[in-house]
Amino acid sequence: MEVGILGLAASGKSTLFKLLTGQQAAPTGGRRLDALSALFKPEKTTPATVRYVDAPGIPEEHRREAAFNLPELRAADVLLIVLRAFADDAVAHPMGAVDPLRDLGFVEEEFILQDQLVIERRLERLARDLAKRKSPELLREQELLGRCLAVCERPAPLRGETLSADELKVLRGFTFLSLKPMLVVLNVGERELAGDAFADPGWAVWRARPGMAFTQVCATLEGELAELAGDDAAAFMADLELSESALARVIRESYRLLGLISFFTVGEDECRAWSIRAGTPAVEAGGVIHSDIGRGFIRAEVVPCDELLAAGSLAACRQRGTLRLEGKTYPVQDGEVVHFRFNV
Ligand SMILES: Nc1nc2c(ncn2[C@@H]2O[C@H](COP(=O)(O)OP(=O)(O)O)[C@@H](O)[C@H]2O)c(=O)[nH]1
Ligand SMILES: [Mg+2]
Image (cartoon, rainbow, N blue to C red):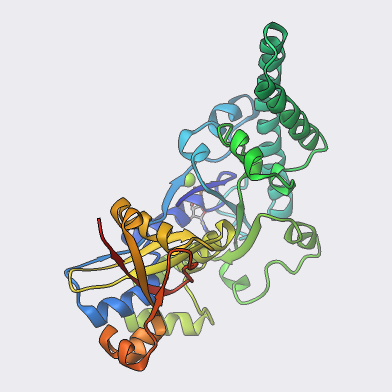
C-alpha cells in the first residue's frame, strides 16, 4: 500500500513522514504479529509494508501542475493530507493564519482542478479521434469523462460519485487525485491533543463525505514518543492519554479507507502479515503468497490470531477444535492465521 503525503508548506508533512517511516518500514502486522513472533520465535518476521511518499508543499499556481504530477503521488492508493492546526509564531504559515478547514478546502479544490485539466485534455483528444473513426469503446469513455467533467465543474470530488467496477477500470489510468481516498491528519499543538480537534461544526460537512477518514496527531510530540523505548513510551502515552501511536492510527485508518484487512502465516521459519481486500476468498488470499498456492489450493486451515495466542500452538487449537478447515470460497477475516494446503 502506498500513501502519498500532501499539504501546505510547514504543515508538518516531513515531521510526520519521519515518524511514519522511522520505525523500520512501517510494520503493519503490529501487536498481533509481534505476539505471534514471540510464540513461534521464527528466523524471520515480515510485516506487510506501507510505503510513504513525502510530497513537497503545494507551490505557487504556475508550478502546481508539475507538483501534482509527481509519479509517486499519482501511484498512491491513499492521499494523506496534513493540515496545520498547531499555533507557533516561530513557524510561518503560507496562508498567513492557522485555519485547517480553509486549507482542506484549498487542497480539495486543487485536486478537483487538476483532474478537470486532465479530463478536458483527454476529451479534446477523444473528439478528434472520434471525428476520424467511430469506436464504441471511445464513445463510452467520452460519455464517462463527460460525466466526470460535470462533477469537477460543480465543483465536487470524483470520490463522491458512484462508479461501477468497469467505469473505475476505465478511469484508473488517469490516476485522478479527487478519486483517491483521503486521510485527513490534523496536526495539532501539544495542548490540543487531549481535546476533540474536530469540534468545529465546519468539520461535519467533511466528515459526512464518502472516501474520507479523519484523525489528529501532534507530530512533534509523537516524534519524542518514537524516540522512547518500551516502558518509557508506555508511561508517556498514558500521561498523554494516548491509547495508540500516530503510526498505528494512520495505518489503521488507511487500511479501513481501502477496505484492506490483514491475515497471518506462521511457522518456525517465518511469521508474516499479508494485506488483502476484505472479502477476498481463501484461494485468492493464498495466491497473494504464491501463485502455486492459488493454483493447487486444497484447503485452508484457519484460526483467529487471538485464539492461537490463547491456545499456545496450532496443535492445541486442533485439539480444542478451533482450527477450522475452509474451502476455496471462504472469505478470510481480519486477524486470522491461515495455513494453506496445496498441491501442484
Ligand atoms: N509546535 C509545533 N511545531 C510543529 C509541529 N509539527 C511540525 N512542527 C514544526 O513546523 C515546521 C515545519 O514542519 P515540517 O514537517 O518540515 O513541515 P512540511 O513543510 O509540511 O514538511 C518545523 O519547524 C516543525 O518542527 C507540531 O505539532 N507542533
Ligand atoms: Mg517537508
